[in-house]
Image 1 (cartoon, rainbow, N blue to C red):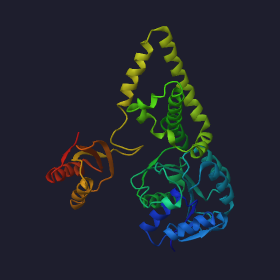
Image 2 (image 1 turned 90 degrees about the horizontal axis):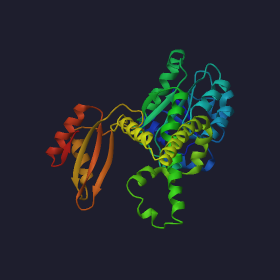
Image 3 (image 1 turned 60 degrees about the horizontal axis):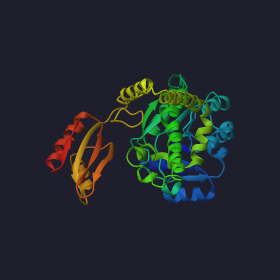
Image 4 (image 1 turned 30 degrees about the vertical axis):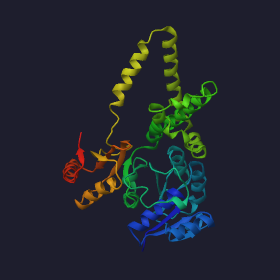
Length: 367
């Protein structure tokens, strides 16, 4: 019998997962649950096999249920479908905060239904089924937060989930929900708040110094790149992870108070220590991976500023059967050229890529 996957919420994330699963295995039945208008678009795009306006009836025949809604909605959806999920099925979600829904699942789902929280660390500045992409999850970190004994108590169900998600091209890492939320507060949620506050600080400074943004290049731009993220998305995240965020803010506030004391006293001893600690800690941030991924082997390629340069790079590697796992434009100077960073699965692939690209006339090297 074909695998039955129910995706509740067929927008950007849910629609992209549907496209990826159907592309990987055309026999998989993907049932979407959403509004009539969204389901019509999802069907037209091929993201789902069929649609349903009622979640409870859709999940009653599911092998796997994926809740692809915002965190606040996800909790309500889980409570609604819990009585109708058949024994032996697997339920997961895509919320970026994990503890609240893990606790709710333990309360609402039966013992014969496996719940594993999930957080795909990917997305787009655009939203909705119109912008769904079958490659959205390709090479993206996908965090799973099973309870401690999930792989032992429900091995077949857990295997089904990891295999299905693997079909999307995602790269899975496992950790507890508590650890996920604590880490997310530190390296995702607090940076978002600080980015917004820094931009608003500059915005207020414009009232006195209109030229302030003319000088806000370089580091300021890098630190505030995420400041334009939509509040509606972040409201759910901030409310759902309130405890961890407040805890991190308290630590940050104490550090700011230390800086103020140092400046007022004229003794920058503590500040010197902060700079030294930051320099040492930052050296531990991997430059060859995304999120919690295993390291990629990097190759750096300089190319002249000309039309088709990137196509020539990727074509050369394609002909050599070398698969690029990640690509990033590091810098470019108009009229001169630019440097790309290419990530490969292994050092052997990276070494072969350097040879192929240099032979093709590019300047390629590894650090």
